[in-house]
Image 1 (cartoon, rainbow, N blue to C red):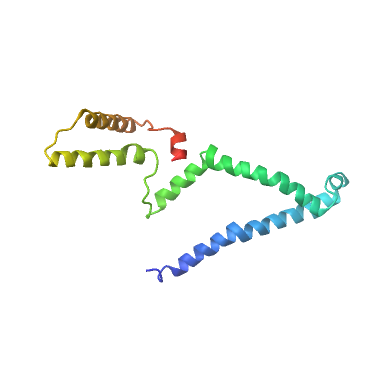
Image 2 (cartoon, rainbow, N blue to C red):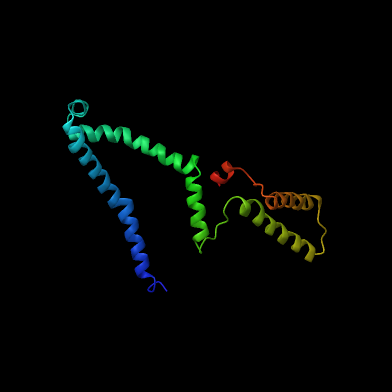
Length: 161
């Protein structure tokens, strides 16, 4: 099976290496070089701020790395962009075995777990206690919310899980 997919796997690893490492570094060097020698070098006002190419690179690194790190943080933690990307990846990934947050972790798997506990009790001729009944009722409330189009849990819970 692995031999069959070797070409696709190699292509995937190549693309990851290219985009994550090579293209990133090459694009950064290219951008710095082009902007300095085509823009800054030709304007005396900018040349006063950035007298040499190494000073330009240093200033941009000092400003750029924290700024881009903040933008990356905002993308992953404070916007819906990454959540949408992750949702699409999960929908398209046939090997997804982890229970995603929301419906799956809040309702589906707790419900399956409670049903299995109830089945074991019933098969041992035990009665359900008040706690079992209240947990089932709580799960039923969550299921009704989902059926009515409401959400279960909060966005913060989903992000931190």
